[in-house]
Image 1 (cartoon, rainbow, N blue to C red):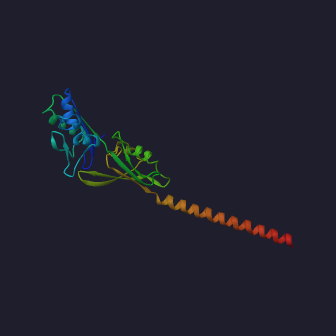
Image 2: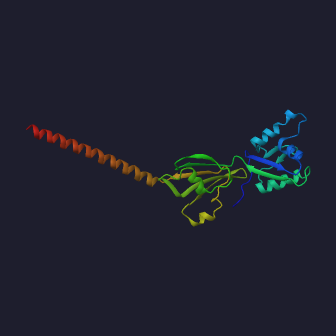
Image 3: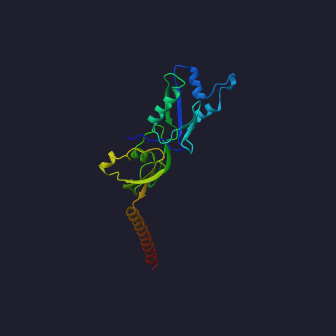
Length: 222
């Protein structure tokens, strides 16, 4: 599985742990305040809410300041942050997690929606399942995936009926992917035709019954 890369507007939870409690507080809750009531700093609120990757691809991290993080995988970002924190703390452990790892599934599915994935890993089949699966009109052989890579949006079509799909880089979705299930127009036309046929049959049956009923009344009166 290809690791997703950090993008603008990603929300990251970043924690630092070490043998030093003071250092942990320094990086996880901002610069320590001398007052007992002053511990809940702006940096701590940022930690609770996550660190937003801004339009320059940077985050503002306690002590370290602005850090360019866009375009890195989680593994690369952890290694970089560990190096930077090591200048202040001995043997730190840095953990990074996507808070807003989300995908959007629209089109011919039963529950079109934007899904937040806490595990940071979801396959296309799982995403369709979370969206209530395809409707009877969905085209399994032509599902569109829109993915942004290095600031450029690209659209790719995948065939769920193909064996090659299991080895495709699109088998697992990445954050902010958009999945669009196209309607099978032939099925839709057939269903519409069948509905019209059933409606005509129903109307014809009703007219026939009414005619027989009226004819019976007419014959009884003679």
